[in-house]
Image (cartoon, rainbow, N blue to C red; front, top):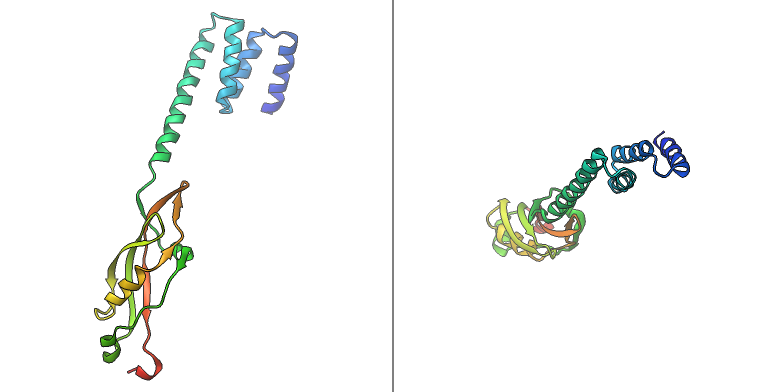
Amino acid sequence: MAEAAQAELQRVLILNSGNREALAALASLNLSRKKLDDAREWYKRLLNADPNSRDAYYCQQDIVQANEWVGKTLAAKREAVPRKVAVFGAIEHALIESTSPDYPPLALQAGVHGIVRLKPIVGTDGAVRDAQIIRGHPLLVPAAIEVVKKYVYKPTLLNGQPIEVETTVDVNFVLPRGDRR
């Protein structure tokens, strides 16, 4: 419907390029459709046809301010990329390189097995910078931290920018068949 109205108003302008009502209606129509650049252009044409049109002058100034505000807002959003975000589960799919942990000899002798849950911080380059213990047997924790620090992830992007990610990782220590107790 808006396209039909715009086409009709443009036909009126073909017959009379200075028709103030048609120019004002096209400017208003584009403004309501959030086509700010087009609306500003129609208001300019209206000012050329009627230099005393206060509505066109003030609307054009409002559009200029709106465009500046939108530009500043978009720039602020691009700059406001967080330094670190917490990701649960999705980071697993970005794991590029991992290795199995070396079973600690003392834990092996004692028959200790189980899961060590860690909270690693993955840097913007995909390397694990740090890993903190969430839970796990004390004999298994150092080996788990050591192996997780060797993991490499595909860098996580937010708005096209690499960011640090905090996630959780489970390292499973399973006793060899003959050593189960």
